[in-house]
Image (cartoon, rainbow, N blue to C red; front, side):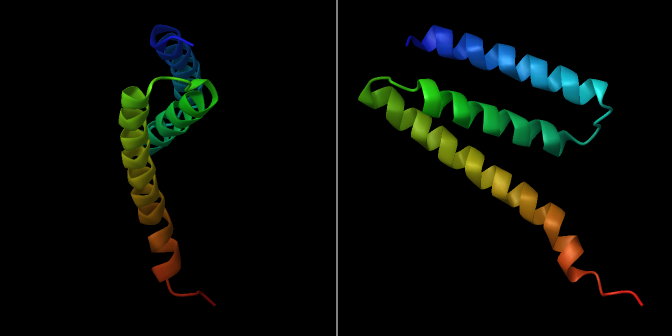
Length: 87
């Protein structure tokens, strides 16, 4: 599959998801970042039959996106874990 088709498919899916999030009233940019990371990783894993050099770049980008996603999730979960229990 060509890189142009992969990029176009990723762009269309991202636009649909971002439009839905905007329609749903999501104001937090974290959800947009997480959805973009998930879309990028899924599209590249499913359609990512590319040469070795491009595959290495995609792997590096996916690792960075996974790291950023884990940091965002940790920052969302950490206040829930630190908050003392109420009676």
